[in-house]
Length: 322
Image (tube, rainbow, N blue to C red; front, side):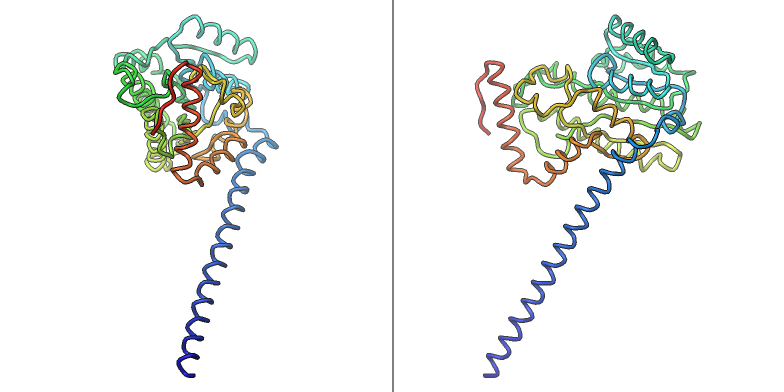
């Protein structure tokens, strides 16, 4: 009988431990969900109720936006201009730059400038950019310029020129633009840098591997910059965006239902400057990003492969198996 009682006590102790673990798990999940909705309110609800114009303008007179003639870049430039910030646009098409620049000045009454630069050419473009920005009070830098795959494919099938294009545009451009404008921000002890990453930065993403990896670089680059320069008055943000209707993804028919309009996206995203160091920029995207972070890798990879094969079929290409 004594042995049975000891077994009973041990079993009871195990059940108590298991119950305690379950309670801790439930409490952790409750607090995790409460924290998520707290951040959503902080990032998207409160800024929409309060004017952010004074806050945005405090960083400086000018905002520099790369890849500014379409999509997220153009929408950011317009949204910043709506807050009374002068904008300097950088892109490779002089005609589009001129048209966007004139339209922003006419619509929002701010000063505009533009620099013609093809970031795919590598380091040769930066001396002229540095010279043009020498005497500009750059308060906000939006590193938006980027390039995507022509279609999803295995890494060894991507042309070498396309690989270098992604390295030069998606990685080097952000690093070099920060290197150019950051010294002035540090000297003035104010400034904000928005580095446009992507939601695919945080999961293994086959068939667009190099693009996803370049956005992982941007995400970690931004986080490290924060720790280097936050004490000097510089705000650094990693923008982990989901799908936005841009020219970056020309084959978007199969995922159009997931995409936001660039203006709608920028309206919320700009309001997070100075508030969130890492954000998806929009409430809908933040919910999508939170869900994707909870997904196991195998399920994420399966979903990406499914979407990639839908895109390949649109391009009259054979689907692939991993």
